[in-house]
Amino acid sequence: MQNMDTRQELCKYARKIVDNGLVVGPGGNISARSGDKMYLSPSGFALEDIEPEQWVEVDIPTGEITDNGFRPSSEVLMHLYGYRQKPDMGAMVHTHPSHCIAFTLIEENLPMMFPDQAALVGRTAFIPYLIPTTDLLADAVAAKVNEASSILLGNHGLVTTGRNLREAYYRTQVVEESAKIYLSAKAAGTPVPLTDQEVADIAALESEDYRIQLLQKMK
Image (cartoon, rainbow, N blue to C red; front, top):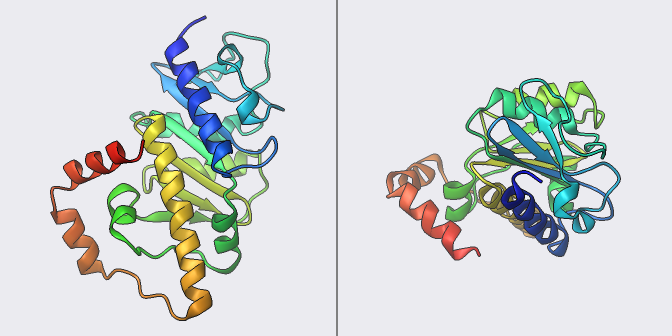
């Protein structure tokens, strides 16, 4: 069985996603890249039930399934097109966080509200509702992956990317927390986001060091 470390890492973050309520039932799908292969959740499995050997190996250049007999997630094209469009992407996490979905029912542009959001996530892109599992959605996500590491899907959920699974997963957590904060603030009054200058000031810090320290805290 090839790339067992990648497979075990996928199991680890699949369970974190479920434990933190970012999907329910068999919803969501995640993948990680290793060389020219991606390892993707199999179709019909709840994320927490996937064993290391059940992640589906797909050849990125050809789209060929190259190892076991499991069917890949129905969102295989979204992951495949994303890796092809962004060669330095190491992981993609697609979840259905409740606050993110609620946010997309009333808004499109998620404001920048606190420093961790600015440092770890940055601008969040938005795609209006498209039918899941279609090449229309896959094309739309692929068109955004070089613009933003986090993409809200209208009436659907969230896609995050990263250099590795940990980065993509924590971006999922931060975007969901951002949506929760925004909705809470809007219910109480008028949200006051960070200004462009305040966001620029965060970027002017030792931003890479700050982001690394933030990731190290979030274990």
